[in-house]
Structure formats: C-alpha cells, structure tokens
Image (cartoon, rainbow, N blue to C red):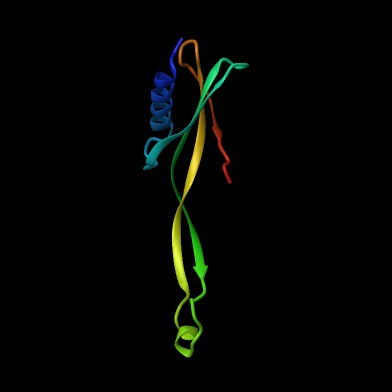
Length: 102
C-alpha cells in the first residue's frame, strides 16, 4: 500500500512522462483526495497553460488624449489542472482527468 507522499511523487512522474516535450511550467500540487470506493489516490496537479487571457480595461479618466490612447491591456497566463488516479495497492496509473475549476 502506498502512502500519499509516494502517490504525489508518482503523479508528478506520470505528468513528466505524459507531457514530455510540452514545456510544462510551474507544475504544482493543488489537491489530494483518497477515493475509498475506488481504492485510489486522486492527485491534482496544476501548471501554467500555453493559453493567455487578454483583459482590456478602459482608461481611468476620459479626456481628448485618453480617447486616442490605447486602452490598458493586461495578459494573464491561465492555469490548467489534471487529476491523476493512482492505485493504492501498488501505485499503478489508473487514469488522468481534466479538472475544471472555472
């Protein structure tokens, strides 16, 4: 039987193997759940996506010059989350799920 710390290490290794060559950045542990009914650990890892959200805001005050100026544009890197299903008995990989937190 594997403990939670070993399950997290395995999930990180599975992520590295599955996403090899995809330049995953800022991989981090987000959530750990023991699913008793399936006898498995569910380890959610998050990472910076290649997708960017663009947020455009209007200038804070209106004037003739601000009307000509471009609005403030802010770009935000989105995070993605994957849940790895790890068997408790021997640490086998049971699957990977998309974790929607939005």
